[in-house]
Image (cartoon, rainbow, N blue to C red; front, side, top):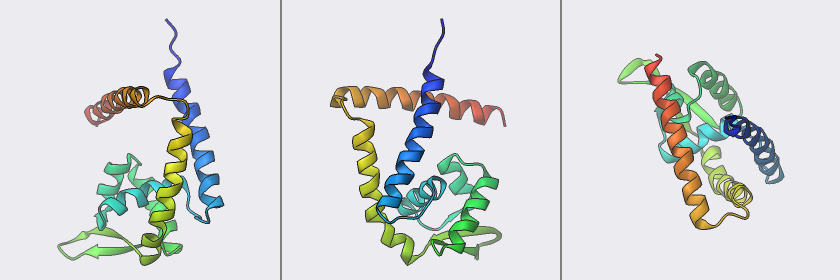
Amino acid sequence: METKGGFYITQIKQLQDRIFERLLLENGIEISGGQGRILFILWKTDNLTMSEISEKTSLAKNTISVVINGMVNKGIVERNINPQNRRQTIVSLTEYARSLQVKYEAVSQQMNTLFYHGFTEKEREQFEVYLARILETLTENLQTSK
């Protein structure tokens, strides 16, 4: 039996990224998708280590480092040495980043509306249950292969 779920997920991810970045630009928010993922995490919990950000975004540590460098250069986040553990770097939001949150959340809501267009509430809930199961399986697989 041929399955196409993985293929569809890849296509959806690519299209979603392009549409989301277009919506961000249309709303005057000049950040990339990777930067948005990091901001989303930091808006929930500010002052995280690079490792914590990597874990919460599922982005590789080397990718996090590159993206954070770009965000520091744009004045979106700051990097500081953890006074309790000088080997760790703490990433913190700037006031500029905090000012973007309301606009970013509005764009996210636009994307969600587009994403679930034509779905009933029950269909959306069931779909998200399936996605959560896939995510859990993939996360477990990644952790056991380390």
